Image (tube, rainbow, N blue to C red; front, side, top):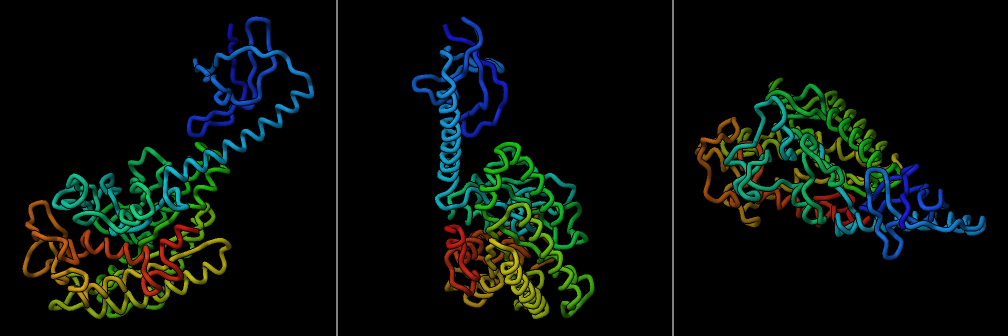
Length: 418
């Protein structure tokens, strides 16, 4: 008759392989010395769980020497299980050495977090999402996918779920929030997840991951994951509009870069080692800022000025933070290339938004009652500020496998292979 095993101490489970530190069996002759190998590994035996009891076969008391040998075997087995578990996680998660992706930023990367906030800055209604899966308006500020969706596809990952509605923390997370900026005072449309909220949210995420997988495995997985940061567009844009400025002051740029530095350092302390940080987009070329169909030089110069400071900061951080690799993704250059050579990229309209489909751009978002263009793939801009799925695909391709003009000091494909 099988005895009944009770669990005394529990070391955790990973991918349905459970490893007890200590088991004992009673029944049919009193307590017996346990086998030190996990029961789930015994050939032909699978433990039956009933509460905290596990039915097992009685074992004869081994000699002291044999007991020490079994203890050693347990350590070896546990180590092999950990290695196998990591390998299975990596194989199932990604074709590259990237188990998860974490996304931080503004509306360019928000995939639905603002749906849970008290704000008017939401894109959870059609015609947003008309070219997304099942024509769903998920909260992405585009007619289809955003850049991080494409990068996840290239890496072999599922789309990082929104932080505010995520239930499976082993798939990474998207913390992006439309209207947010580097500074906490930057917010458009109402409530947002500030950059501080987003990074603090990741700290909470890591705590939960440690409890779920154990600190060692959690740290390993986080260190191999990719962190994508796209933020700062709203800060620069708001300053220019609020102050009717013709240039971005040195002091304001310095405050943005200081806050960016502190947040990257905080992510680094939490375990991040692979980062992608995007430049500001070509702000002056968005339909709401153009002047008679041409890019506004004030917005362009402000974005260039901020981007140069950001580039220098990232090089400094990469030199000073050991083991950190940062890719500078030049979104500004990609947008300028498409704007200046639209036919080469398959675009026929780079001045007007697809929605609202008015002959003269208006300073507002796309509403559910608005008409929109018939072929968004031929447009650079979906609404008056955000690009189409077609442009996002181009940008992701340049970041993924482009040369140093688009991704420095390496492209994302190379980063994923590290």
